[in-house]
Image (cartoon, rainbow, N blue to C red):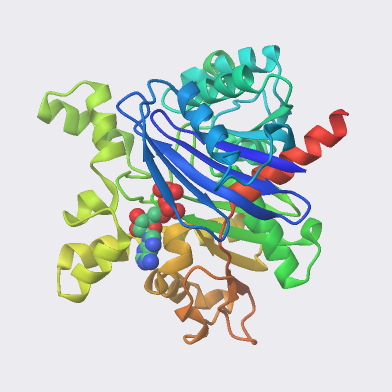
Length: 399
Ligand code: ADP
């Protein structure tokens, strides 16, 4: 089955066409600057990247350009759009209403809209992308795959906050967690690589990208995760603070004369390793600056590793043990010193890292030594493939 996978942001649209039988990517790319001017990046498998500047006032024009590129006589990968049998859409927030991926219907879209409050930047963009595809390809079945769904089976003791219960009842304030598609994909792959049954394994997944989160996956279920009501909680990230004493927000806001939104903007956009180092949110820049003796860049790296290691310790306790740790996403897949820096705190678990193996970048690899008590892997995430697999399953089951 050929599946179009769509991931819409407010001014962007990433896409891939995947043949689910071979799991090969037939074409991929993105539309950028939607609503500003418009640019299509298109790359067929084995071919060169093409860049086309063209007006894209809305996501509908962007989807149309993607579809045209896919059936283009010279560089297209499909003879006709009829070959697309299903479309899988990434949707960020499914609240408590979506615990699994779901077939997209009018009613389903209304329910997603009712979750917009909790993801005001992401969900509306996801819905715009869904509607654009429905208009242009009304007969193709579509599936919504939620970032929150994999974490929707956490126990209440993990997802509740220590605030009056009525705020959960009235406003559904609780931990939801994000990057679920990645945590699910990587934890499943970790079980395969370790040669252990997924439903009888304790895995900690460290998804370390610009946004970073960590999850405890016990017997195939996410039992805890570091992001919360929003993607601000947990690890120190590129520009996000992660965990902080909430009183600091009031304290700084009063000093600066800010309202709450301005303070939260500081926590989302001006904090993290960027705010600490004053150098960059990008770990390549931080590593280079630290190597040249920049102390704040070094501090940012140290704080990042320390926070990840503390969560690994906490989640080991949450599961009363850990069999496998997996590093994924931009930093997890590429940054040796972060993996080493985290694992240096974990020797008490009997973890030892093979320095040579840990040189890996962007490839699946066991980086722990044969005698390490916990297997540690680098596993590149592939959210598009995970969305494709979910989409195929839901569409086949709905027939
Ligand atoms: P997101 O999807 O959250 O935007 P990614 O998973 O793409 O994030 O990760 C982006 C981050 O990964 C970059 O900000 C950078 O810090 C880090 N990164 C990417 N490639 C490398 C690399 N080759 N070496 C070190 N860090 C890298």
